[in-house]
Structure formats: structure tokens, C-alpha cells
Image (cartoon, rainbow, N blue to C red; front, side, top):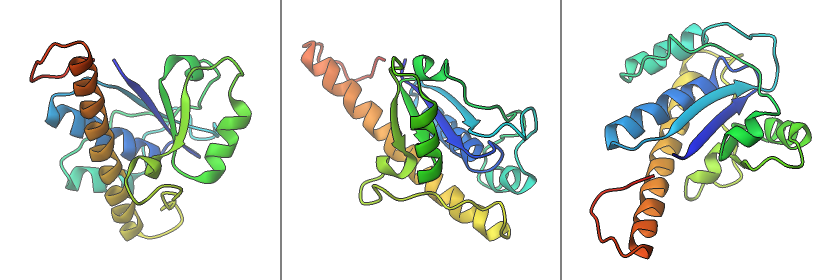
Length: 170
């Protein structure tokens, strides 16, 4: 089953929103994925997402209250197929932290969205609640794009096998 880890700085704003958005979109489309989130820093480890992140997710029908912040580990680089940074600084940190033998592919979240490659998801932490709405828009656009890509890749694998099935297996 494909696996993705979303990574921001503290794992209380952007990355838990990305995790929640992808879990919701994958469930809506009936797609099995392993999804988690983490931060490059450890100062929020064990804490729930920021209340503004919880609120924007809830307004959009997604419950992220059970999520708890954690720090990314070297083992994550072998555990996940994709480690997806929310901005350039975290991508740089992930490249520095990653072991040479890790199999995870690194990318920015918005690299998955056509026309948004190379763009970062703005950190809403220091701003007002409206910043979380913009973050939610970015992470949901990426969630839709990730699911579409996984479905397309699954269909391509099925065609290569000559199965001709109308469903996706991962």
C-alpha cells in the first residue's frame, strides 16, 4: 500500500492538515494509503494540532483532534514511499537528516499539484485564522492530486498486467 509522510516544522499546523485532508480524500475515493505526519523539530512532540488547524479541518468535515505531533526519524526514510515537505526549509532539513540508504522519495507538497511545482505551503502559525483557510485550500488541492495520481498509477499497473479490471489494487 502506498505510504506518505507529510513534514512541516512543528507538526501542529500544516502537516496534520495535509494528513487529515489526504486521509479524507482517500477514504472518499475508496483508496488505501498509509498516511502520517511529523515535524523536523521536536518542541511540540505529543501535542495536538493547533486549535486553528483543528477548526478549519472541522469546518470542512475532517476531524484531526486525535493526531499528536512527533518528530521525523531516520526510520521514516525506509518506512514511507514518499516524504513530503510543506516548504523549502523543511525539504532541505529532510535531505540533511535522511540516511543514504533510505528509499523514500522527497518532494514538496505542491509539487504534486499541476502548475504549483516548486511552491511552498505558507506557514499560518504567526497569522490569523484566515491563513489556515489558505493552508487548507493548498493541502486539499494536493490531496486530490495525490489521490488522482495514485489511482492513475494503479490503473496503469493493472493494464500492464493485462487484468482489465475497473478497480484499483495497491
